[in-house]
Length: 353
Image 1 (cartoon, rainbow, N blue to C red):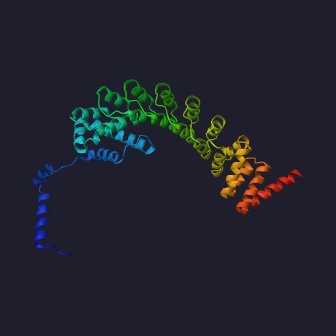
Image 2: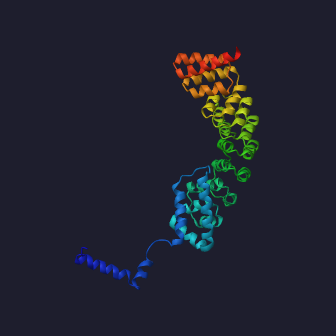
Image 3: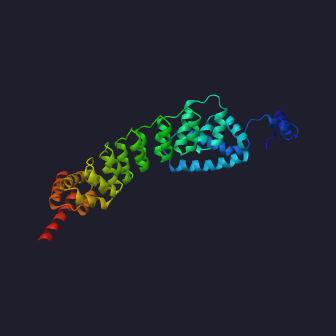
């Protein structure tokens, strides 16, 4: 082992002497910045929230984070109280206020807001939005009663997007910012029928085609039905395609029977690609020969034998449509499809003889 030179040895001895001196060490520690260990989990949660930009829709990971953080903070607050909140605010700044709104902790929010002389509007917008996003109506009421800035139409949008009807109703009755079309659009795609109905009856902003289109995609049949029967915005042709692709038979049946936007030839191919036999069979019975003919043309044109087989075997294609498909396959030079369709026709001819 190499020996330290004289100067390094002296420094090492001096450091050891200071750090092991029972009189000097407490004096040094008294002037060090830092927080007691029990602050660490809370500070980590605050900084973790701050690293993620505001997202109006809740999702599983965020909801778990909110629940875990709320439980941990409530336990911590019960032990250490408002004095610890003041020190936490000094350490983390305005992010502490946003975090209190996120978890719905009114005592902490009230304490910090009451002690602040100037509050950045951008920060208060986050406070309002997080309170609405996570359904903390008691915070919304507090912010309203104390006339805090930062509320906008996006607050009601956010409450609607996350299924908080009580918050939507409060904002509608007591605030004047209103909402945007995003409110009904987002509530529709999440399947919050009660909020869609409330917005339809009491607000004038309406929605866009996105509402019914995404409700169909996500299998929200009751919302699709309500929008179709009570609104005029309609949907896009993607509604039928997406419902078929995702296997939502009841939505497909409703859209095909009651809407005009979709194209069954496109929808039947989407269902066939995903193996949704029940939907392919439904279109085979209800789409009509013209749509089945177009579907066969597109299936053959894609060169995918599996699609052609699905249409022939599950959509009950008639001989005329299969003949058309055979001719198209010959023109394209798809030998596998030609062989399959020719064999099918020969078997049908044999059965009818």
